[in-house]
Each structure stands twice: as structure tokens, then as C-alpha cells.
Image (cartoon, rainbow, N blue to C red):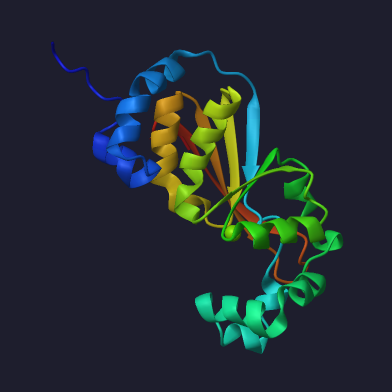
Length: 211
Ligand SMILES: [Mg+2]
């Protein structure tokens, strides 16, 4: 029997959607069925840090400027203490309402407990949220969310300050789903911290960039 073609090049599954061979074999027929299902409506995912909430006040402080990445994490965890950190930097007035109001699911990366506390302090904890280990897993997380919830959106909108870094993953996702994915690369204002400064957009349809 002749082997059917995979929908995507198998290496793309791994490189952009982080699925291993076992997942691909397991899900390939499902993906094929999924691509034929009729799609409905729009769903909006948004990142949290620097998309719904500005980290400018933190990052402009000397102590954060000098301690990036792991050193910054250690500073928060062992010197400032988490509770003080959330109290000082996270509150509902500073939420970027223009983004949060239209968001269906907050899709953010990093440590689950920390991100959950940020959502609690900004009064966004009642919104649906997905927390992944790393930015690169966001397209895969969306795919899992659709499969788990039987949602097949015609349009996916993704707001993120690093949206374009995931272009390849979202091209593959749009090809699997046969739908439209709108990537909004969000830049927040440095002066009015709960305001958007600029949004750049790339629209993808069935793997192709159409704008
Ligand atoms: Mg971000």
C-alpha cells in the first residue's frame, strides 16, 4: 500500500509545532479530518507581558536593568520576594484594556505559578488562560486547545509583542486548520503605560501570507 502524503513536511511538525514522530503518526488523520471541518467564528489569543501589561516600570529600574534573565528571576524570587513584586508592579489600572477586552484566551509563557499570580493581581484571573514553558510552544498550545475543546475557528487572532517570531509555526497551523490567522505584533506606549503605541499585522491564510 502506498503511503499517503503527510499534510506538512514531517520536519515542519517538529521544527514549528514541536510534535514528535509519535504525535505526528497519531494525529495525522485527525489533522486531515480537521482541515475538512467547517470553521466558525473568531477566537482571540493574547500574550500577557508587554501585550496586556507593560513591564516598562520594572525594566527601567536599575536593579532589573543589571539583572536580566535568570539573574532577574533570582532577584524577584530571593531578594524582592514574589509577594512584594506582584504588589508593587501588578494592578488592574495598568491593564491595557484595548487588548484585554477583546481577548478570549490569555496565552502566556513562563512559570505557571508566577503567571497565575500576575493574572490574579491584575484581576484577569477569570479569563481563560494557557501558560506554556516557552514562547515557541504557543502555536502548539493553540492546536491542543482547539482539539480538546472541539473549537474550529475560521479566524484566529494572536496579539503578542513577539508575534512575528512565531510566523513559521502559525503558517503551519493555518495550513493544518485551513483557516486565517492574524498576527498582531503589539508595541505598548513607553509613556502612557496602559496604552498601545503601535500594532503591525501579518495575515496568513492556508500557509500563505496574504497582506
Ligand atoms: Mg510578551
